[in-house]
Length: 146
Image (cartoon, rainbow, N blue to C red):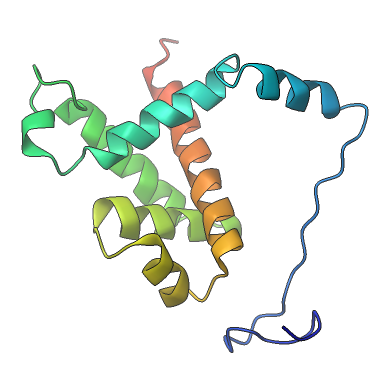
């Protein structure tokens, strides 16, 4: 594999190592999620957003009476993905680009897109989850009455 300075994908970016530390502050929330993954509403919203994004190109599901996302929700999802992709934050923009390519453009599978974007699989899936969470937040804000 080489050491951490090795440019594995030959993309010119330095390698980065990530670690999750369990502190007294974040351990209880992690344990609650392990006991009941549906207990936290943001996680549930993210799963609903993921399902809606997956059904964007299914014609039978985009009808108002169908079980998939309504046209207004589909437009809201597209706008949220485009806004994320044009973010000033590099991580948000990368996450938005992944969502745009995978869900909106249907440009290929996860492995192909990770290679195309010069990301490791782990980083690709972290960015994908980050993007789903950001889109879920945007949809929640947009659908919550003031």
